[in-house]
Image (cartoon, rainbow, N blue to C red; front, side):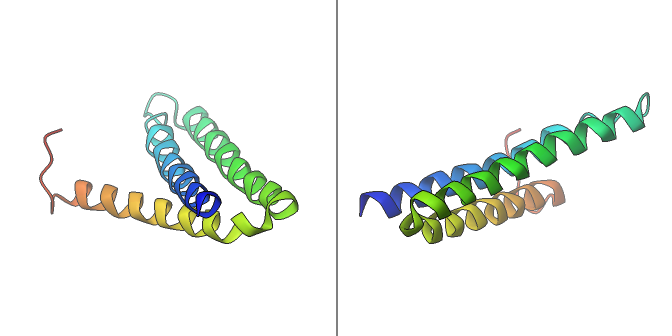
Length: 97
């Protein structure tokens, strides 16, 4: 039970971190320097996605039994974080921020 549970938890954290990178990267695009901000935004997101693919590749080679739980956690963490951000941005849910 330890390896699949740890894989799911790590996957959820990596998925949520990818959404966090998108949120932070989007703030780099400003009217003062839109092209430079977009380049930095794309670089940050590209490295985040490459990190997630690298972790999936490492799991595929060395720990295949953890691949499905990690991938499931990754998708759940990413989609769950996107839904939370969508609800916060739409005003459907009031937060104390």
